[in-house]
Image 1: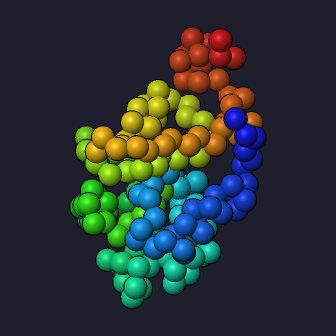
Image 2: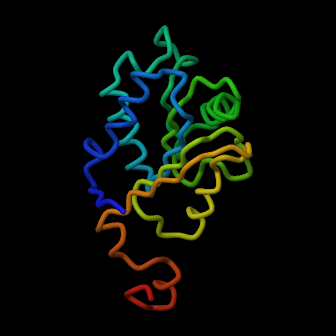
Length: 165
């Protein structure tokens, strides 16, 4: 296992390169984060770095290759994003999301699930199962940087333990 840091600019550069180089041929990725604020930060960073390369063709909403999904996403956008993302020929290659995404939805062709920070709840561990539901090969990548590992999980916190055992 390699060390990872909290510096998304360094750690997630490969996603930017993949979207730029491969466009709609880049593997479909869902990146789970632990907060709405972090979801928004990563989404804005990816878009600001990619600029026009964040679109597969003309810069219109239907051509976006990067989207964001969390509890603050309005219902109309949630529906548009899910309809597009579950499609086999989806333009969306990277979906930055919180646990609000994917509950009750079967998305078949996700090739990579990225966890940015170690999940603090068991619910997010379930989200790693979002990948490869089509029966083909896929990966889960977890960036478990020090700050995300040093906090006790929800189970230990509820049992008033300050360290996980």
